[in-house]
Length: 261
Image: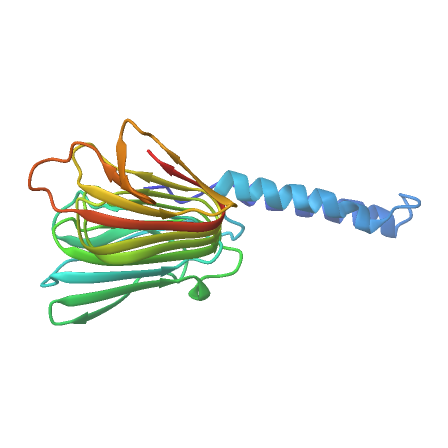
């Protein structure tokens, strides 16, 4: 887990003190010909510094850890609308939990349970605008997940190598995507980026078929030692383990490159 940021507040304090001192000096004519708008670059530098140091612009906007017990849940769906926030998802190592991870203020998963079925939703619209903390979620490995993750200005990394996936969509507007093929897929997975690169990795022994739709502006680079191509636009991981179920991943984009690793 990424720890909650604790630094960065001193940057705000220093910036406010410096700005107040300059404006006070200007009011008392101690500085002649001073243009307040000249401070705009300094403000941008401070804001950028805060984002780099603590990953957030709010004083209490750092990530907060959470965990939800599994209970009687046997099937689950995860829906993430992250907006400009980066998302990292992977398999949960701790048993007896449904999901755990890190979230920004007010974006803790909204959980709805209907019998043995669970639906969790994380919505950027519920989070303060200046909260830029990446979201990290770890999912239970012993039940099937429907996964829907989208951002319009953020990167997504989803490691499904330990997961059972019952279909899903991973999409970005402006942002790269990194996907690791699932342990088992009950339905196809769709991966799309409007402006960004897509990297798909397949662990050794996994039985994975990847269908890539290329265009003049969205090209493909393949590790031919890892994949064969039985037909146009279709790539199959070499040397799958016997009796391992096939996972199907569809990849397409508008501007960028796809990499099969």
